[in-house]
Structures are given as C-alpha cells and as structure tokens.
Length: 235
Image 1: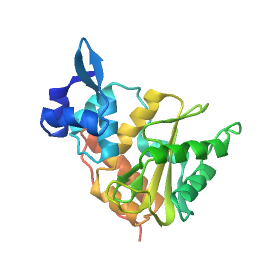
Image 2 (image 1 turned 180 degrees about the horizontal axis):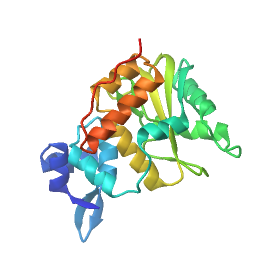
Image 3 (image 1 turned 45 degrees about the horizontal axis):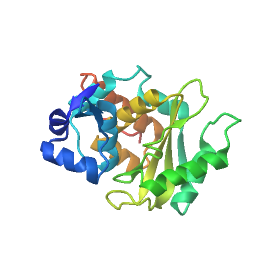
C-alpha cells in the first residue's frame, strides 16, 4: 500500500522535511512511482522499529491490512518456545547459542545461519532498545518450515549489542518465516506489543513464561479493541 511522504510524516509525528532528510541520512525506505516518492506501510513500520522512532497505532493497523492473517503472536512464541538462561559473553556467542535452540529443519546449515546473523549485525545492531533485540530485522530468516514461529531467548546475563540506547540486551526474539510477507507481518505484531511497558518489565524480570505470554495476549486483545488487564505473576 503506497503512503505519500506527507502521510508517512504524520504517522511518525515529524515534518515532511524530516522524512526527506531521513531517506538519505538514515536509509528510510521509499519507492518512486511516476516521479513521486512513496513509503510502504510495513517497511515504514519496520524502519521505525529498527531506528527507535515512535510510530502511531494507525500505521500498525495499516501494516496489518497489507499482509496475510497469522496466528496471534503469543501462539507463535508458544510454537518457537521461551528459552531461558541462554549463554554467551559476546554478541557472536549469543547468536550462536540462539541458533542452537531454534527448532530448525535438519537440512539447515546452522554454521551458515550464524554467519548470516553476524553479517546482519555488522550492518547495524538489531537491538531496538530497553534490553531487547530482534536479529535479522532487515533480512528475514526464510526456511522450508510449514509454519512460522518466534523464539524468545532470555539471556543468562545482559550482553552488549550496540543497541540504539546503548543498553545491553537481556531478551532476544528470533523470527523464522516461510516468506517475506509473513516475516514482515510478524515483525509488525512484535514491534507493537513491545511498546507495552508492562511487557518490557516482565522481560527484564525474566518473569514466568505464562505471565509473559498472557501479557502479550492481553496487549494483542487491546489492539483489536478489547480491554487489556494487568496480569499477576504467580506467587
């Protein structure tokens, strides 16, 4: 879906001239149609997430309408699992450990996948701030899987990822998708729920798995117009 630059600016709450400056200075993705520049909703949401730029919920809603219907994010994480005490003393070590816990098809070359992840990080950190990283934001992991999944890895101790806010990463989400549209839709869902302060608190606290998944589901219900409610952690 094509979005004029003026509308893109309104979604990010900045002047249009700032959007035009970001195209050249920060790599904001655009497309040229009949000598005019447009943004794509899902690409704009992805760029905003990766660069720590606040975006309106209306942009998220538009992004959702451009991609396939998928299971709820909480269900995708159940499929990929919540993995605790993931080791590693450096970014490379952590990425290797993360690949090791992913439920990958047997034909996948794990060493090659680690190399691809490291190359992506060399282009720019996937740490989105507040101790959270989403590896491979710009280049989705596309594998021969029947269903997409998301794996949440809670690290044994925080590791420097060169994130946009310079905070070390303690929680990492790995996305595995069968197609680019599916990857982008999952990324949009993930970026939306991670705006929730209570979810971020639960991730920092390494809360019980059911508390984390229940909070994600509650935020998703709120995005669909249903009221969210606080989730109490079991005593």
